[in-house]
Image 1 (cartoon, each protein chain N blue to C red):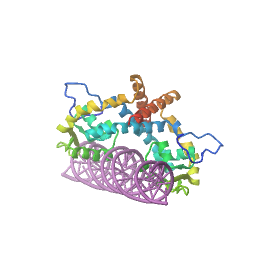
Image 2 (tube, rainbow over the protein chains, first blue to last red; image 1 turned 180 degrees about the horizontal axis):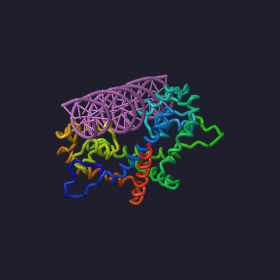
Image 3 (cartoon, each protein chain N blue to C red; image 1 turned 90 degrees about the vertical axis):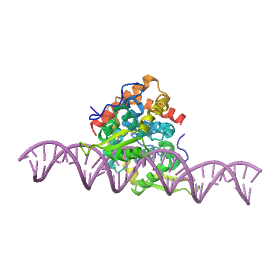
Image 4 (spheres, chains in turn purple, green, brown, blue; image 1 turned 45 degrees about the horizontal axis):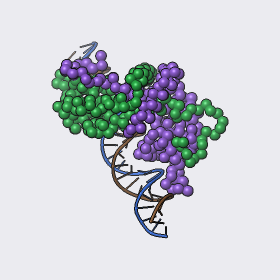
Length: 157
Length: 157
DNA sequence: AACGATTGACTTGTGTACAAGATAATTGCG
DNA sequence: CGCAATTATCTTGTACACAAGTCAATCGTT
């Protein structure tokens, strides 16, 4: 069904080659985008993007945090975080402030509006984690496998 | 360990709120980026990015394809594919050609150089799918779970 | 033939991601 | 103390991703 119309590629010969759907990396890539796209309409209502939402969750969990620590929590670097945090600040959800005791450090904290978002987000968002249609057991399996992949890939970057 | 230095956030009270690491969507997000980052050094040697590599795999599998069909195979839209395909074309790996029988259609096919890349990629790349450190059984489990997520999320966009 | 609707592709604008380079503040060592 | 190294952050440049809008070619119907 998928591809029609055109020739059929694999010209006989050797079949040492794998198909797209056999790659676990593709399954991972497709699933991640599907999930983000599922979150999007809900997060739109809250006025944040998916990575912005994750930053807020990290702030809810850890309180005021250095950019460095947010990067460690989310596995994101400054090149991604700095502009993202500026957008969150421009939207009034967080405050960014250089620390007086060490001018290199920037501390990110929630505004009243950012704090208020927590309750709304908590109602609207986690529903999706369950709406992925996995049983509780499958969710645990998936988390374990994903963490294992993450750890192993990081180990030998 | 992760976050230090700053206050500890969760101000007692209710614990109806989840931590970042409990979200399966975050595990998915982190794993996908870790895997792409693992692929990057290998793909750099081939001169392609990860999404570009997936397009090539689709072309190896299906032969010359319409942009529309590549989009269906990769779950990507024109806004992503058109510039990506132009970059692949600029790098000499694919050819893009309007079809004479229907001027709306653009057919993408491999150049000699793009075809030649297949063998190199096949040697260098799939090693990583195994280098994720999962057993064969876990790989199958993971693929099944990821596909289920993808299908369920797509079902109720 | 006429023409409104559909289709396939492209463009524009916003927001991630990440590499690589720049910079100011702090630290550590002789 | 003086200064080289380190640290935390920011900036620039490239490449996805996706929504929304544009446009030409084709189709369906009359």
